[in-house]
Length: 219
Ligand SMILES: [Zn+2]
Image (cartoon, rainbow, N blue to C red; front, side, top):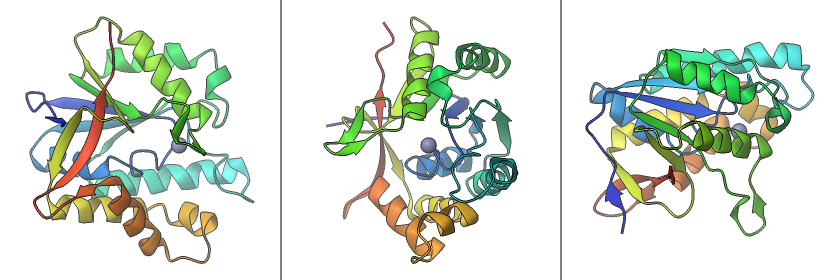
């Protein structure tokens, strides 16, 4: 049993390590929130410049930023904040904590959502160290603060009911990561990859579609 996600807020920050992180699990919820008039800002710790195999980071960074901008636009997100920290090295970046503190001050929000911070999504499917670093830094910064901090991962506590139009917007959003996805899996069309991934991330039943989040311990 999960609780309905809180609704009495106006501004959420989605704080992640890389471009495409919002699209892998939570974009359908973002689409619903913005459709209902809420403000959502994406905060990206890195530009994902190490994420395209065979492409120079100096070339890949701008490509991935542009793909993320298009992707945000598909779900009503037009504010993106880039922290320009090193992709793949966030856990050892002494400035991650400070950069996150600054952005949380500069963009006050009632809700902060991030990617999962546990060691593995399921047995044999390890998490990525950058995701864990961002998640842990946020937990430390927001400890004791009256800001809801949610992660998108296993053992959910809350759900967002989304409509089919939100799911379709999330698929379009993930498909905007064209270069990234086409290098990741050259054999499968980008739209097919996007559809499969988004359908995996949304709990669909005859009654409704849900995106799940876990409220993190902020004591
Ligand atoms: Zn990532």
